[in-house]
Length: 301
Image: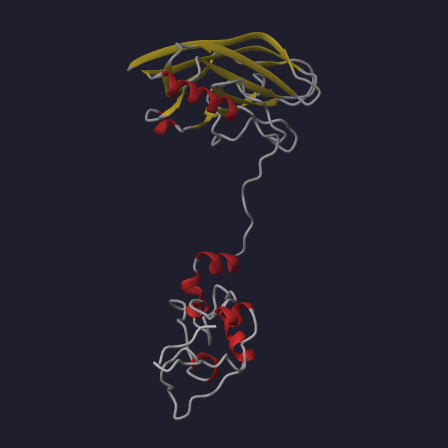
């Protein structure tokens, strides 16, 4: 286990946004190969105040993400007027993410305005256990301003604390392969589900909604349900036809609603141990009569 402190800067005399008002900056940092790298801390500092050339808005914004591979902007808007944001901070490809609003120096002459919003937060960043296996790490910045406008005097400093742990070749190779797949950014992400209070009550808390446990089987001893009993439960055992028997089997194989009884008349185990003729074909009204030999044995034909 070795702690490496990496200090890097991004300094440019000027940048020019594209037609969508975006300017992308990327810096690669090489690391040792064959290690599992754990990014434990990221510190970021704005060294100089950017200046806003020309006429336009006196406010700009930027996103910063630290990733194992270059981060690809998605089609999801950062603001209603700014497109192409980086993936969400909870995405597997993102190790660290921060964003900030930057004001023109002529309006605000203080570094205290527009503090950084970062993930993981400052409170838990020291216990961050995000790890990766590739032998490089990228600092990606997206500056969001006015279309085709030039911004001058950009300077940012970064300090990364990386814990390097030696690992075997198999673990390292599988880790690199996984990170390559995670780096393939989806242009549009939609993984939530709209719901309502009534659906939440029924799907999440069915016991509370329906007042206790689901009702058990209620078996009636009459008609179709009495054929499997050896002794009738009434004075006279009712006879049943082929249609009744098959209807009982069909009822036992029907699915019940999640809020309904498990079986109003037919027990779910009725489908087991049925005569093959009941399932596959008609019941013969008169079975073949048995013939016996003189010694009492049944004669086979």
